[in-house]
Amino acid sequence: MDSRADMRLGSLAGRRVVVTGGASGIGRCLVEAFLAQGCTVEAIDIDPAAIESLASAHPGAALTLRRADLADTQARQAVMQSVVDAGPIDVLVTNAADDTRHAWADVTPESWQRTLAINLDHHFFSAQVAARSMTARGSGVIVMLGSVTARRGWPAMAGYLVAKGGIEAMVRGLARELGPSGIRVVGVVPGAIDTERQRRLWQTPDRVEQILATQAIRQRLDGWDIAQMVLFLASDNARGCTAQCYVVDAGLT
Image (cartoon, rainbow, N blue to C red; front, side):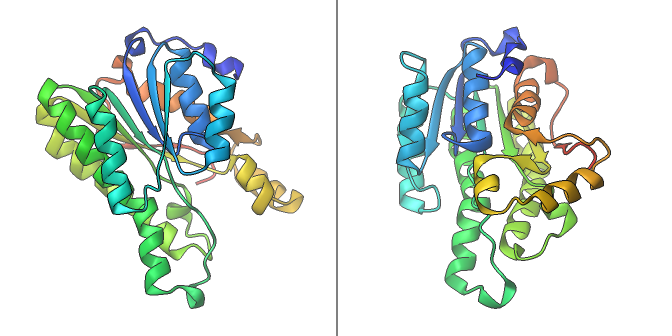
């Protein structure tokens, strides 16, 4: 666990947190950061190997791992209902995503719908289930993960960009609707984050150097940089924060 998890936000202790896409990359950092705060965490992921790795790293932790394809409507509804049935949700972080590259000429109606299903639909419908639980208690926080790519317009990602741009609008709209019920809705917009997936599929030394040269601060960001912002926004320290999306990109945009 990264030393940055040593940050303590006392209001988070004992809260029940749900993280989608929580077994690898940014999601795993989020799960481990909330565990370090004394939270009870539910992580939902599609990758069985990543789920097993996370479980093995935290034996005996207040951690429940659930496997589901959140792009599948029935699977998403079933897993979210099982989460709610197990207890009230204090914090929901919708992080699951698929940033597979897709050139515009290769996009089909089926691939377009699949892209939006995981990168946009799952955020709304997971939030809908959680908000019903939160409304009954008059409190809760929903944090949605966007992407700086939606603001920069990177190529070969048209569907992904549309979805991530939609999340920012969703945050503003839901915050207005849910605010009277005591629920805060915020977004976090990561920049170029160093994850195993990025290193394996797309990163090259030249690409990394290009990103660093574009940033205001020449430092690589990783999932823990995002986790620190999410922890703060989920805590009572951020009680005045809602309807906004907070960029963590070292000045890339």
